[in-house]
Image (cartoon, rainbow, N blue to C red; front, side, top):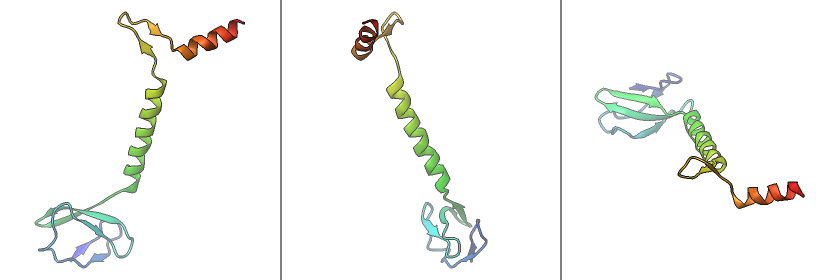
Length: 92
């Protein structure tokens, strides 16, 4: 008999039939559990928080990529045409 690492509820699973990497669900707390090893069977909770943090980091990386300035081979800042148009508008 296996126990949920989150709530210690019993999980009715045939330990000879589970495979490493298989995803199980706790009947009590509904936590998703990954089989990390088979002899003896070990379960690790799969955290939704980790997935959300990864998504946030990807979003931040995309935003940073949009804000990156471009430099030429001499290391000088290359201005976008949009930036030049805005500068001309400000001068008028």
